[in-house]
Length: 420
Image (cartoon, rainbow, N blue to C red; front, side):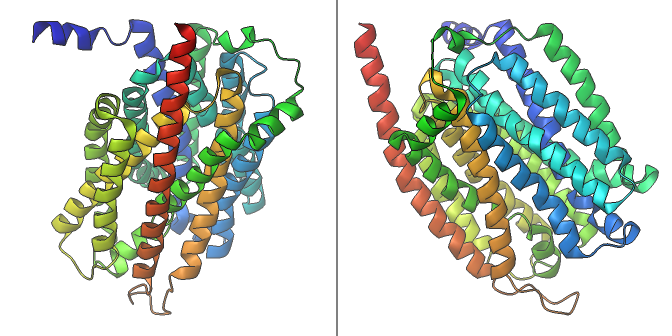
């Protein structure tokens, strides 16, 4: 038992623990910037005299600009030290967030969200490329588990902090908080993060646009990109109208929504590292399949609910997000093992773009499937249809992840044979 404990403690060096922490914090700031806009909708609609369609454009502008910039940056992603690349895009993200904090008009805010998306949308792909370069493939599951905690933390903090600051100091204040905190994070990155440039030792004469084309046209990578499309569809479709479904269909008072999100987020933080560890120990696809079955059952139940007690909704949400996080963590770890070292930056950048764009399209499709009656209190219609589409996408994603898992195992086996 003592030897096992010592072995567990020695999995990561102190510097590796720092890298995990700083990447998790970076992800936290980027996701929080995206999450915090949602609870500001009521204030912005009134103060800026804009329609719900215009507010939706502000939200989607980030996703689509992030997706486009990721594709454009992919060809250059493996040409630079990943630390320098991270700092370039993180500075741009901070500038975009600062513009949001000073935005006086709707048009200015739209421009600010586009700038934030152009830079912020690439940061996740650089983070995953750094993880792939620094950590062994057999440990990446637990690394992704810790990084996934950032998403859960942003879920807990995004809604209540955004509303609290906005109500007290105005809607600009959440963006000021993120911008100031991100500057401090940037200083820590500059001072303490070491260069990440091992991939530069692999000499390449291919120009950036050929590198982009070679990555996009690689048949093995295409399978990963297609899997991401279905993963994003299943992950994003329930999100946009989740709050409205909770208040209208489940009969939960809007003041209790932060409790629902908060409790779900706390459990997600607890589960994240455990899921990562199980993914490394028992196999990424096994954990992904477990998550698919569990979340699939919960989605089928959740999307067919009527008025329900809050504690039951919280219980269903906690179990559903246990399944969703199991899928996200295990699939992220699996995706990092797919590209060759020389292609990691480009692959991660394109994959992140596909995720952003697919998520934006999925959110738009959700709005087309679900019907909102004119009455402000009438339940949403066809939310069960949305659940069915999500279930189908989850089944297709599971089949594709099974094939990817076999491919990655084959690649790793070939690498081991070459090393011997």
